[in-house]
View 1 (cartoon, rainbow, N blue to C red):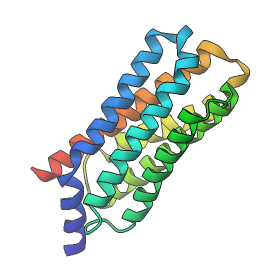
View 2 (view 1 turned 45 degrees about the vertical axis):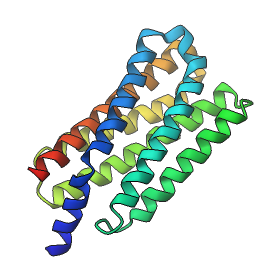
View 3 (view 1 turned 180 degrees about the vertical axis):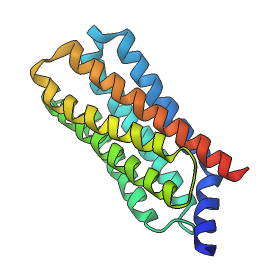
Length: 185
C-alpha cells in the first residue's frame, strides 16, 4: 500500500503534463477539421512538431516520476523515440504521405494501447471514471486501424479520421489530468 501511494503521489505531482499533451493534441485535431484540404500536407509537418513536443513532455514526466513509478524507463524511452522520429521526419522530408499515414496511424495505436493500460491501472486503485478513459482509448484504437487502412480513400477522409483520433486522444489526456489532479485533492 505504501508503494501504491508513492505511485499516486508522483503521478499527481505532474498532472499538468497530461493536460498540456491533451490540449496540444486537441488543438491539432481542431486545426485538421477546419482546414482539411491543406491538412494532408500540413499533417506531416504539424504531426512531427507535435511528436517532438509530446516526446519532451513524456521525458519530463518520466524523469520527475522515476522514484514513484515502476517502469518509468519505458516512458523515458518512448519520449526519446518520439523525439528521434520527429527529428528524422523534420530533417528528411522524403517521407511520402503513405509513410506518414503509417507513422501517424501506429503512433495513435500505441498511444491508445498505453491509454488502455493506464485506465486499467486506475481501475485497480479504484479511481472513478476509469471506464470513460478505457472507452476513449478503445475508440481511439479503432480509429487508428481505420486511419491506417484509409489511405486508399485518401485526402480529406484520412485527415478527418486523424483529426477525430487526435481530438479523442486529447480529451483522454485532459480527462486523465483531471483525474490525477483530483487524486491530489
